Image 1 (cartoon, rainbow, N blue to C red):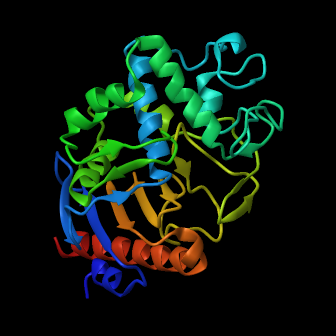
Image 2 (cartoon, one colour):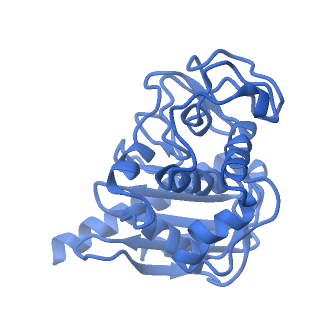
Amino acid sequence: MGALDRVTTWPVPNCAAAIVTARGQQTPATIATTGDSSHQFRLASLSKTITGLTALIAVEEGSLALDKPLNPATCSVTIHEGTTLRHLLGHASGLPFNGDSPIAALERRRIYSNTGIELAAELITAATGITFADYLREAVFEPLGMSSTDLRGSPAFAMWSTLDDMTQLVGELIKPRLISPETHRDFITEQFAGIAGTIPGLGRFDPCPWGLGAELRGQKEPHWTGSQNDASTFGHFGGAGTMMWVDPTIETGVVALTDRPFDEWGDEAIALWSQLSDAVIDDIHLTKAAS
């Protein structure tokens, strides 16, 4: 049985999943899929990783700076003096899950924040004079050929996409073309190392490592990725029952999209995603051993 065969038994109305790898080849390629690859799913918080990537493109273009303190007077919410884009993308700004004012000091807690990601998108619009939706399309979707992906609300949780499009994104996360290798390393490096935090639906972790828009697996247990995933694995899961990860040590990523809300099957979803992840890694190792 192939790793993705188990996806067909998940308790969800619709599901589509894929494995993408660059192992042994120059360009990432999709090596297995299941489900309707053209069906549109709400990405939920996978949107945060895409917004993080978009912000880093704006940084490389010179429109934004990761470490320049923001002007509180120009922000739509209250922020601490000294808050930077890096704080927002790394969930270290003290801003709450949803809300207009910080609930913790800078760099003290990893507070998973829709507000922080939404503010990052607002900064792109303010700096470029282009709406975030247009900038997102021009900077990410069009270059990657993600023609069936769109933003329908908050940059933190309201993007919709298809499996076909998301495999293009996963390929970008494995071997970046839109940002430099140096920026990509920063993207997937722990920000403000050592701080603790809570991941909604998963639990509290100390430390709770995070990159610039992507969660890092680290030593978190239990976790929604597999027990065999390396600590450097990065990605996201979403409240729409979606998940994606990339394990740099095997140059391989997985994306699984469903339309059953996470809070209806959270514990089961975490277990099933973890089992899928381990099965994928087993298949990758078996393929390597046979080659």
